[in-house]
Image 1: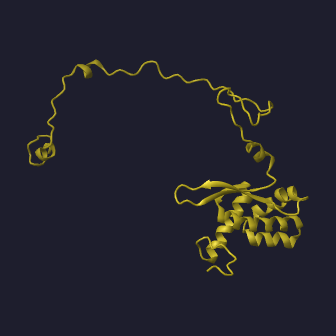
Image 2: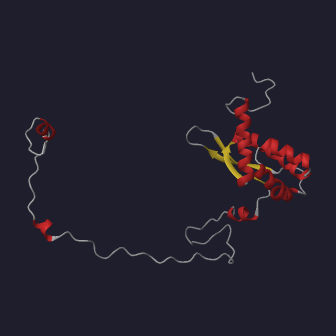
Length: 197
């Protein structure tokens, strides 16, 4: 019976569990979107929300507390300077979990954990574009014309002629090979003269 169980153990003992959650939070601060299992995402979400709350307060004690929780000074600097200002008007709900199907190997529920206010460059990448198969036209989102089209690369042509073997090698008669099932045994017992030369 699961009475009074308030934590997800993630199949680890406590110090490994804390390290896993800390590592996921570091990855979220660094990449702003991570793909993990649903249980891990829910645990990492708790820590990420606490970190943003500390960063929004912005004091020295809050910064030191964030360094103690995250164990990454550069990540805390990014959290305080870039991530927390995005959430200045938001009272909570800094992250979201999107369900991402089932992992084929073990059937684990997968999820994407990301900030609700993504950085502008990540937000542009997130635009899904669906194409109508018959017309070849995007039906969901049309990319802005300001995006520069990719420069066409000149096609590299394969060499027209391959190197030919010298004629003496082509006209030379081939020696019949002594083959078959007993080839190795013949050499072993001394039937082939190539062995000890």
